[in-house]
Amino acid sequence: MTKVLVVANGPMQRRMAGPSIRCLELSRVLHARGHQVTVAVPEPSDLPDQGFPVVPYTADTIESLARDADVLLVQGYVMRRHPGLARVGARIVVDLYDPFPLENLLVFQRAPMDRREAEHMESSTAIWEQLARGDFFLCSSERQRDFWVGGLMALNRVNPYTYSADPTLRSLIDVVPFGIPATPPTDTARAIRSRIAGIDRDDTVLLWGGGVYNWFDPEILIRATARLAERHPNLRLVFMGAAHPEPGITELMWAVPEARRVSDELGLTNRFVFFNETWVPYEERAGWLLDADVGVSTHHDHVETRYSFRTRVLDYFWAGLPVICTAGDSLADMVEHRQLGATVPAEDVESVVAAIDRMATDRRWRNACARRVRELAPTLRWETVAQPLVRYCDGARPAADQSWAPRGLPFPITAMHAAAPAASPRRDMRTTLRAVYDRLPLSVRRSRPVRWAVRELRRERARR
Image 1 (cartoon, one colour):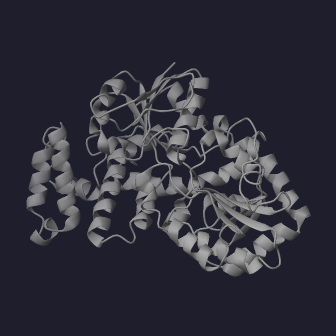
Image 2: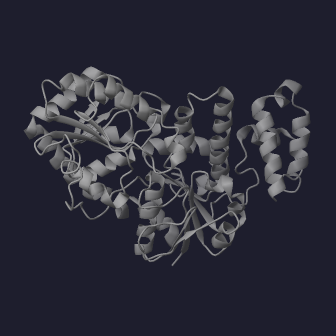
Image 3: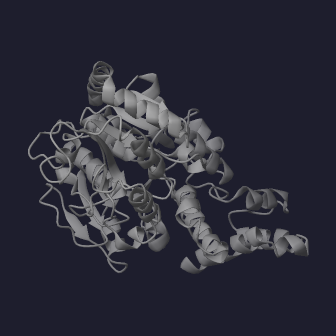
């Protein structure tokens, strides 16, 4: 039995977003496997008893919690906010399922450039620190894994030690997608047709099942609904979560007011398009999913798309819903290859209109898509997809390059070190780096990347 401390990046409440849902579900799997699990959360939780402790932490208490653990599972900005976690002696598993530096490029896209620079450097530094220190890494897809292997390579974590331990690098980074519960959803309470005025029993309901973040394109669905309103007067588009459970994030979601504006201008609001004003509790989402006919998710074409994993699409699979989604990410590839619905090119309203029209008119095809979704769903259960994490916790071990001095150093620094006089790198790394730095041209020393690297090295030295 391994003592595992799962440190959540955000609140773990009845109303919670994807990162906390993932922490909770992975904790449930590890607990069921027999590990001694504790979940540490930044705010008191209102969840019912989980069978394992869910305890609030502060900057003053998190390290004492971590010292009692064999394995830490961290995500997001946890290690950035609490750098002492890197030195408590536990094995560190870093969950990279959410490539948030790419998301932040869109979250802060409309902010002043100095704010954008600051946010980018902060999120990139958080990732760099985790890649440098982690013993084992999780990601959501093979495509994501390729992305993160590149990051590990840049930080010298792909090296003779990690390669000799496992030429596939699966013992360093493996795929643990978002999953679905083992128990199918039950129809306890219809949440759409019985609660929302203007939606009737025989309407065709398209459900947007998660948050409306800035990297999404809800406008294209709204405009497609307007185009189809006359042909399909019983068509209804429902946004399940127009407000995020964390207020600070809601303030940054400019996609929501823009979607409302388009819907209002087209005269669709509360007639064909409906916005739920609160975030649906995690354990109550089944009532919304089972009251829908089709799950939808559309986004713009940008770098976040390629490496994303649209976690709420998994809820559509859990509920047996056929899917309409934008092509380009891993789950869209699954929808297309397994014929689970329709994929559409980004920003192509004609294709969206055609996909919705077919879902609304071709019931035989829609039911066939739903049947294939139900057949796929058992392979996506949390206890199945989490097996790489379970195996690691069964025999937690340090990374193979734990004692190698250049591990975790960005390649510009590593290259400078290699070119420096061959003294004793482990004993005199500071002198070596200083000698190489002094030989750099002044213009290079004044460049933003080098100044950033020097600042981070000084911060790390101060922590020690």
